[in-house]
Image 1: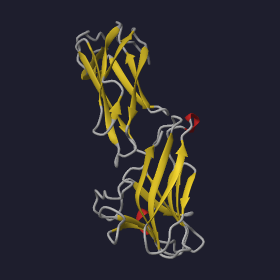
Image 2: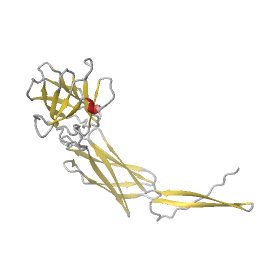
Image 3: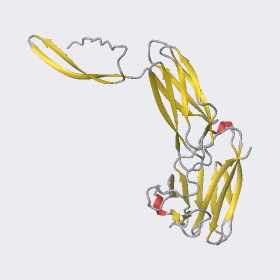
Length: 283
């Protein structure tokens, strides 16, 4: 068996996409055909990454034999602020360059949103998107897209258990602190276990600034243990039968990274309720 290389020449004006080929081989009076394909990619490839300090880096890869000069324009979602609508770039053949835009205003958002970046050079346009995650998605517990009584973007489990949301936590219409719903967390059926609820993804700038955390808590009995922990800051307290607003302050140091660890905990033997969970920059 012998391998023979086959050279393919792709026209310079070929559009991105898949092109089907048929390879025909003749030998000793026998002919065989083999289907194959080639894929023509875009000359520009964009990669978006959300940095710890809140900026978004856009890496522009030039996968062609000529230099590319153009502009990356940004489309921010409603409620989000960017420090520039566009950034110019020049990238030599078969190399890459990076442009950046500062993103702010994610803290009050109740759901993740998309930032769009569009690179234009010559006759080529490439668009990519990046999902931006707020630190407390659906922190007011008003969104229930599935209509199943569970808050969007949150999951719940007990100590040592699988993450089965419906087992212990659900939206409650009875006397919310604000809006239509609050979040009720029932005690674990095992008195030696606690119940945790966390957002599926939570993200916050590690930019050296300080943030205020607020949450409304209602307990069944004064001795019940209802806790809120946000990146190491623990809020606990409240009294039975009425809402109590707890506040704390969080300092986000640059080494912390973007991950924001958020937990609502019922460590008692009775139901506890949470509502109006929020975070805002204060300096």
